[in-house]
Amino acid sequence: MRYATIIAGGSGTRLWPMSRADLPKQLIPLFSGRSLLEIAVDRLQGFIPPERQILCTGEKYRRQIRRVLPEFADERILGEPEGRDTLAAVGLPAAVAMREDADAIIGVFTADHLIEPVEQFQRRVEVGYELAEKHPNTLVTFGIEPAYAATGFGYVELGRPLEGFDQAYRAVRFVEKPDARTAEQYVASGRYAWNSGMFVWRAATLLDCIERYKPEVHAGLMQIAAAWATPMMRASQTDRSEISLPHLPRRSLTVSRAAVTSRKTPTHSGKVKSCSTKSSKNRPATTAGNVPMMSSQARRDAGVAGRRANTVVAQSRTRIHRSRKK
Image (tube, rainbow, N blue to C red; front, side, top):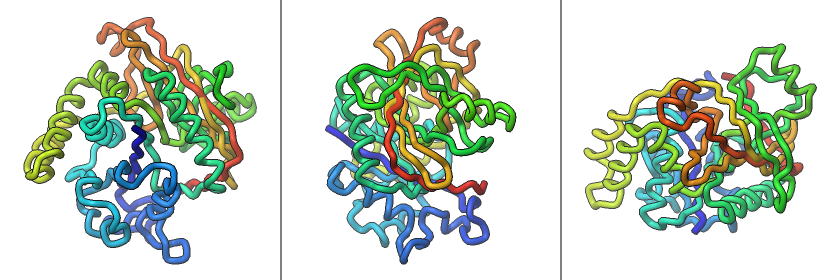
């Protein structure tokens, strides 16, 4: 079955002083009394059933979220007692979904974008789900065609088209936040997309990758997911397991082969693309952006040197607004 995760964490710093630690940007009612989080949930209406939507956020925001989104039951809100990295934020919903359905395909979406028109966005996301369903060892990531040489976003280099999928391409590599000169070269080449931080993958495939690359994170996530299914779920078990998850460094990673599947167009930022990373059972998949990457030495230490991942990108004309403020 198809699932969706909305990542709605944040520390309230990006739109300061409007945002605060207890009111991050995704909860501010900026748009006719509605917040970015509410709009993000609306984007999934008629696309992913509410009972298969999961919110990953800070535990301290639970009450605020329940007030504006009462349709989300407590068990569909994964509250982090202490913030970690994106790897934990995408891994825990995958682990929870897989306990309900071993073949779950889960999308990861952000709560801090305005995306228009929604219908075109959903068509691009549909391509991502179809790709992950047809190729279950594929990780799909969405990208944005850049309109300027941004140094605050990660980039993905596009490769050859992926046959059988609308506007899908293999990705060559991911680069985390280049300097200004390099970013200008990327934009001029027409071969790079901004990494949007949105993904689609089979839950089991992602968790297999986490277990291979970061076994200590995988162990903690599986412990938390097991506790989530019990009547005593979140409280004590989550606190103990979450503290055991390490803070992970961010690294750039070159992916030898990849494929990308969907491009959308933001008003000030350009078109959004999507990417997917493929792996066979013996070929671990890898993603980039805020998900911590492994260095070449770390991959050799893990016994995966020389193995290649695949990524896919597609194109559409969805407009996405992203905040440039840190």
